[in-house]
Amino acid sequence: MIRTPPVGPVSRHQLMQRLGSGEAALDALPDLVLRGGAGTVQVAPIEVAERELARAGELGARHIFSD
Image (cartoon, rainbow, N blue to C red; front, side, top):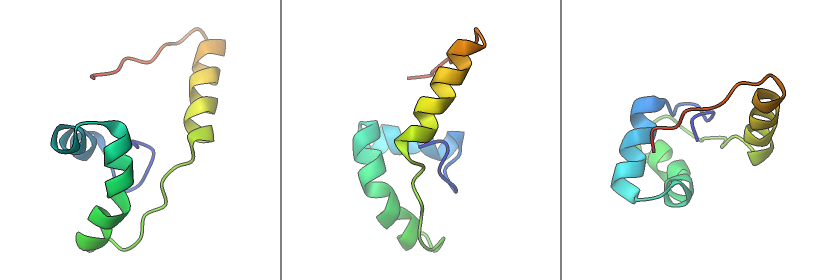
C-alpha cells in the first residue's frame, strides 16, 4: 500500500487504524481516493512488494514494520 500514490506513511497508518487490516484498506483505497478528489488510484501490484522484499534479503537488509 505504501508504494501506491498518493498513500504515504501517515495515510497508510490512518487507513490501517480506521479499517483494521491491510486487506480492508486496499479494498477501500480506490473509493477513498476517488472521493478525496485525487482521481483514480493504481494500487501497486504485489509483485513490486515481493521483488523489494527479495532484493532486501539478497542485500542482507531487513524491513522494519510499525504494525
